[in-house]
Image: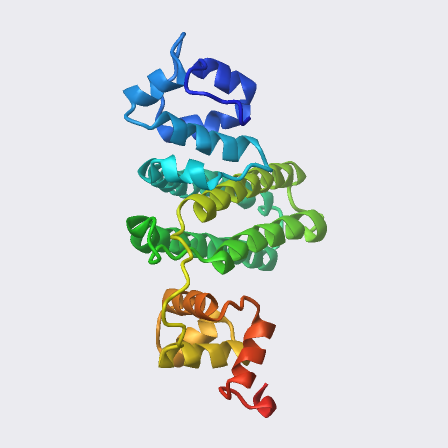
Amino acid sequence: MNELTPTMKMAELLEKDPSLLGVFTRMGFNFGYGDSTVADVCNAADTDPQTFLLICRVYSNDSYRPSEEELEKADRSVIVKYLSLSHSHYMDVVMKDLAASLGRMIVPCGEDTQRVIWKFFTDFKEELRKHFDYEEEFVFPNVGSPEAVISQEDHSGVEETLEDLKSLVMNHLPADADQQEAFKVLSAINSLQDDIRKHILLEETALEGRKEKPEDNTLTSREREILVCVAKGMINKEIADQLNISIHTVITHRKNITQKTGIKTVAGLTVYALLNNLLEVESI
């Protein structure tokens, strides 16, 4: 939908792609557009039309990626507002509906099955809440700067957990579970997965600070400690517990390590640590 323009009618935009209904709702646009253009509705809501259309393109076209020029012209405060409202929508609407369907699905199951599935879901919901809280507190206030740390690892964790939940329902659900509710659960997960993929793309392309190479590529003592832990195969939580720091501090240091070394994979960082005498071969 790259042909979208601020002069087209707002109602026509929604007719072109009804899946944008969620975007319209989160932007706070009231229905009853009549002949109003995209620009008319956006300006009335104090929203930059081009930035709104950028968000629409992300959600309408799987292959679309905003260009540097588009990002330079975009009003990032509009994107932040949209993403923040999306967080509220996920937690206050989507997760509540999913929990209700999940609860009804496992009613016929035994207590052990109910407890295991419910714990998996509630743990995921809590991790999702923590991730959103982190972005609201540390990422969104620093948009456009190197401090706007957006963790791909955290994002992949969200997607992987949803995929695991879907797999459990599709492939390992006890026969006594409510099959109609299972269908609703799967439909809700599929919809949430698709929406979160677009949400993540919007965050990672439009909000993250420029990746300028630091003038000083020397790792700090803390970064060297964390690099060694990574090379030994430790996950973020284990590193945080061992060094008595928060997981998000670990994530920030890992991103700095990648920026300074130019190395992204664990295997590559392990070799780097060995070549720089930070690690003995026997310890890995």
